[in-house]
Length: 181
Image (cartoon, rainbow, N blue to C red; front, side):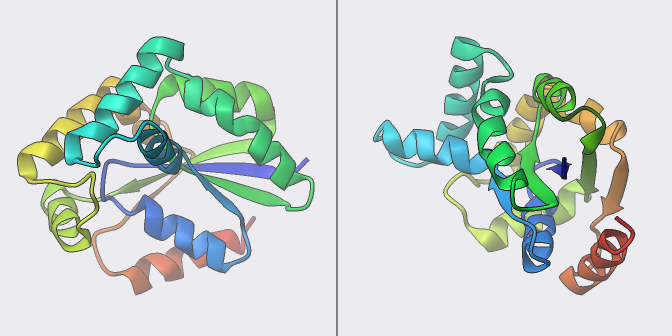
């Protein structure tokens, strides 16, 4: 069986950049955030900063904190049939981590990407995604996601990359790490 890596981090820490680096190295990526964005579109809800968090919270309340993890495991298993490594981008909750750990047992690891709040806010302002807003919105997202256990996941990650510099620095360090796998 192949290796499943899940990347975690607070909003705008660099999870997407980490995913892009792995993807450029031939590793397929499945995004948990894309699942929420698709749910918002499927429901026909206009996109706004608070909507994505509300839908993610509703899904968890209705189906359990591990709903996205359960929905994703089959797609990842299918990718593992032809790929030695698959990345899950956007692990946010301890319940999700438990599902993945139990499903892939010793073939699962967690990577955390960290960055200061100020730098994350600067990134939010420059990327202009529909789920991004002002500093208050970022702080609300941080609080909601740490409420799901994101802070625990980050602190207990198998490996952590501080992303306080530029994309070239992150790319260099992540690529070097990939070469050790």
